[in-house]
Length: 240
Image (tube, rainbow, N blue to C red; front, side, top):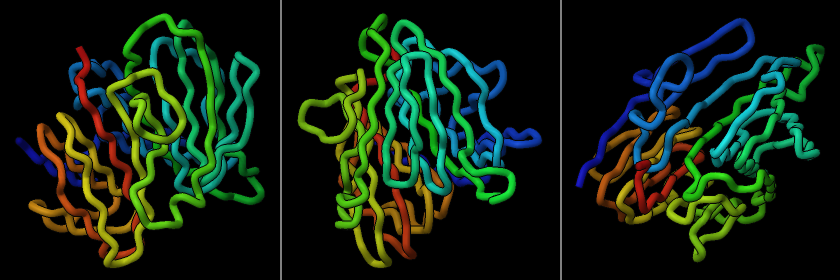
């Protein structure tokens, strides 16, 4: 049973003239995503995209991609004919399967100057060669409860958009100071402080951008110190 605290400043940092990417697992450059994975989680990027900028059309295959916006609005379009605006509280899932091309851009114009801050997460499917698919779900009402809300899952007893891996689920909580949540017990867990700060049982203070990687454990209380948003991956297998 292990708990590893990854401070925000220890993340891999990559940037260019329009993107500031803080990566819990190094993803930009010549890196082995599988070798650096924790459980099934291979990519966990907190990206800040400048107004009017974004990723031009590019392809993915055999990957489950979950996108969660923290600030601003993301404009999505893909080769399967899906398009839309992704905003805080709306989870997006794209199953790349046999291959899909998409674009992702900050929907803000240069004149409004609103930044986009978004967390994008990748896990492998449990079966390659699926038909590409796409799903969105607005969970703002559920998050208002202060409870841990299932937002994406391939597990039959978890809620949220459906991802193509039956061993993983993503939970999110929006907490006011003093509100606690409990980390699900699982072979692998990943807790990310998307906003705010909290006290993590057996770790201590965790701040915005910090992560805790759990192995063969769970049940820890995370109590918000300030208004906070917490993302938790519950994983019952690892990349093989």
